[in-house]
Length: 565
Image: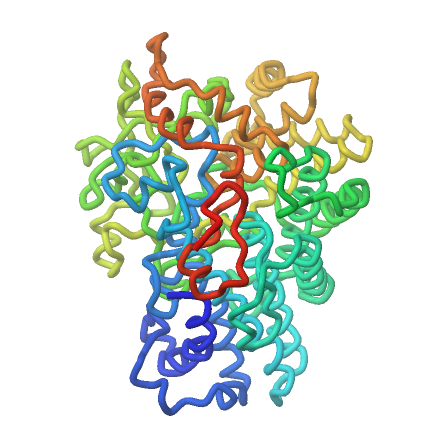
């Protein structure tokens, strides 16, 4: 589907929403039989309809298909692949070419995951535009009406932020059914729109969203504003994209000093007043059966299962230890850790033991019970390292999940989009950039303390001292980037961190492709060779999909990709 056709179908999702009840488990907002007799204007007449329309904007995050297009195109699967470039992940044995081309950095103008993400994010923006324009006219509780509009603005800003991170310049449709032939706009205009939406939500949304569990709030907006300011300031300071010799996606307009000051102020506000915290233990952020704890740290999640829209993410394709999806809840093992990631940890750091683990074996009597749910234990890491896995996200007993109607391939984990730990580390960065390195280092240590604190809250000071000593670097920014990787690995932030700091080319170039020392943590080093061969500096930007440019002749292409149609 192309950009032109998505605008013509933009109202259809709400028609289908109105046919779904709370118990219907609607997994798709597409029902062709209803379109011919539902008027778009008629959908925005009641408070209930406004809530359903807002649900449609959230649904973009994890929809199995978006208006009939794609298969888990965003945070159900595709976005995780689009955001994985860097030194944390090695592709291994990926049998599907659509996954392989992204994981190996071989993406081009015809890559399906790229096209689906472009389309899905624009649909989300258009759905938000309908709410922002039409809901203010509905006769309903004015407080909730304003909240709905500001939630839609936050989500519009979020979807645009991801567009800007992936493609840079993009069209800026700000009204329903905007022109399908709009050109890409310069980055200063794109980020002005993002800032306006997020700032409005930050100032006007409540501290917590009381309407529906898992929805965004004031602090979610503040967190993404903080992300935006640190990204822009970093890109300006590190001359990101200058080597491409193109005016496209220029950051010359950014006032880095002003951005760092704004970032520091927002981060301080979130840190002091949001009520979010670093939960203990660390891994409770990444399991389906610890959601009550997760919400104390996660400022935004992509909901799955019965708590969301009865939709799930495709766990087996990218997450978890390798195993059997039907017996022990393992994944396919397509995504493996790199030796470079393991080198960032010391053994005293409990995050290493959770994030890097062995595969799941056949011993169904070896398990841990967490909040009444059974989680099968990984086996020990082989001497060769052949069973080295990413263990951050883990599945409970599939027999129980299937009895609840959850497919074996699916996960009902709420994916953490934005965690308080990330905010603390960004706060440290902003403080350092505005002249307070001492406090910045204290904040980094605060994040480390959790990694050596037991469930009873007792701090292992010996472990903390070992971590601080091993992790210390004279250049605070180098130390901070390593800490961000240790804490946030495989959550989608390493790609952005390496781009904004101008380090992607250097890091990819230094990746090992031969395990000449027989280090078990470098077993998958040979899998990095296709990435090193395919990576070029211009690949910090995704290509504008070919089929979109075939329909909209005003869309320019990013440098390095095929310019002609």
